[in-house]
Image (cartoon, rainbow, N blue to C red; front, side):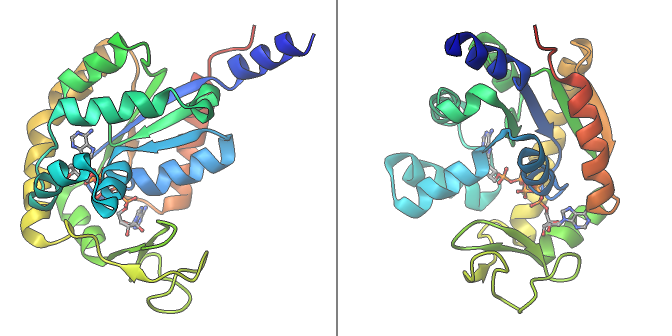
Length: 230
Ligand code: AP5
C-alpha cells in the first residue's frame, strides 16, 4: 500500500543532525553542501532571525539589537521560532540544525520537544583562523549563498554566481561583534559539547581545512549515523 511505502521512505531518510561550532567555522557552508547531497532540510536559526529582521516582524524587532551586538537572542524567542519550523513537512525527511542549540538549555529543550539529534558535528578551529574567514565573508542579499573574498570568491566581484543578486556584508561581521560572538560561544561551548559527549553523539570535525575535504568527512559521519530502515 502506498501509505506504508511513504512511511518507510520517511524512516529511511530520517536523520537529525546538529552542526555546532564557533562563528565562521563553516557550519553554514557545510550544512548547505550536505543537505543538498543527502536531501535533508537545512534549518539555520541565524538565517531565520535575519529574515525576520529584514521583514520587520515583531520577532525581528526584538532580535535585531542582540544580533548586532553579537549576543544570543533570548532562548524563548528562538525556541518558539525553531519548534514551529521543525513541524514543517520538509523536516520530516530529516534535518541539519545550523546554529541551534547554542547552550545547554536549548539542547535540553530540543530533546524534550522530541527533536533530539542522532549525531552532533563539532567544528574545531582556532579563533585566529575564524577572524580571517569572517572578515572576508560575503552573502547574497537575494538567495543567501555564501562567499569569501579570498577563499571562495564569486566569478564576478560583488555579484552572486547562482542568482545574480548583490553580495553584502552581514551587519554582525564587524570586529567588535565578532569578538563578542567568540566570547559568547566559548562561554557555552564546553558544557554543550560535554552534554552531547555524554549522550555518545558528539563527533569532532577539524574545520581548518579545504571545504571539500570537510564535506567528505561530514557526509561519512552523517551516513553512518543515519537511523537504519526497518
Ligand atoms: P549565525 O548566523 O548562526 O552566525 P554564527 O554562529 O556566528 O555563524 P556564522 O554564520 O558566522 O558562521 P558559520 O559557521 O556558518 O560559517 P560560514 O559557513 O558562513 O547567528 C547569528 C546571530 O543570530 C547570533 O550571533 C545570535 O545573535 C543569533 N542566533 C542564531 N542562532 C541562535 C540561537 N540558537 N540562540 C540565540 N541566538 C541565536 O563560513 C564563514 C566564512 O568562511 C564564509 O565566507 C565561507 O565562505 C568561508 N569558509 C567556510 N568554510 C571554509 C573553509 N573550509 N576554508 C576557507 N573558508 C571557508
